[in-house]
Amino acid sequence: MNPTDLKVPNLNQYGAFNFPELCEFDPAEEKDSSWLISFVDILSLLITLFVLLLSFSHMARHETPKNVPIATTARQLPLPQPVAAPKMPAPTPPAPEALPAIVIPQNIKNMVDVMATATEINLVIKDDVLFAEGSADLTALGRSVLDGIAQLLKQNNYPVSVEGHTDNVPIHTAQFPSNWELSSFRATNVARYFIRSGVANERLRAIGYADTHPVAANDSEAGRARNRRVSLVIQVKGPPAQSSLAATSLTSALQ
Image 1 (cartoon, rainbow, N blue to C red):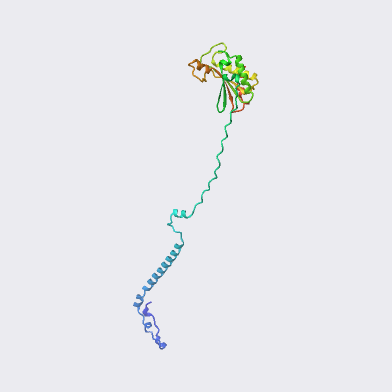
Image 2 (image 1 turned 120 degrees about the vertical axis):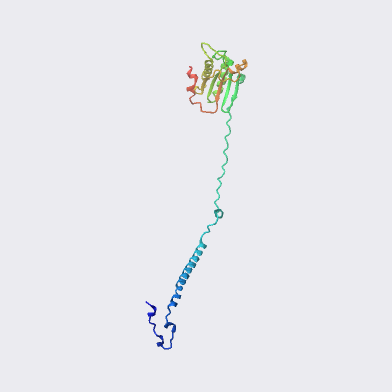
């Protein structure tokens, strides 16, 4: 449609109203006003941008700052302090038990040496007191010494180990082919004498060590005399006497 074909009403017919600008239509003017559409679009975009910026700034004020160091945040939150456990008093160690008193009768005191440790009492009797040289038969003096010791043993219930020892001089007889047999028979005869004197059989065991447990060098007569001995080891600390002592006793094995 061509704008020139439009019929513009004549407004002069309405009396005093006279609008000459409406009576004439200029197509060039329409082309010059087309920029208003683009201008309005730009204004709309700007307004939308300002609204978005305003909303973003409002949200940013309520957000937690992201650049706060972790250590700073941790310092602001005190951690609970651990509660120290109550100190318990150290247990008092038990007092060591005193060893039983062993009183050797005066008439045999010079023939018996007494040695003690934390668990045992050792009564050492020289072999020449109990036996003749090369023999396992008790002498009269030996029996009197054992009578006094038997009275001590009957006052308690401790296990007793009767141990026979020799020097390193070899022996070879019909009765004792070596020092093993000699030391074993001597220990066995002492144990038997204690049993006949009233000491319970289950408390005793007899062991022969020959020359394997010397207490002195065997290169002199004095040293060999110390090694020829019978030891009565009283176990004052350890298992009770009612154990397997009788099963391992040479007293029963050699009867």
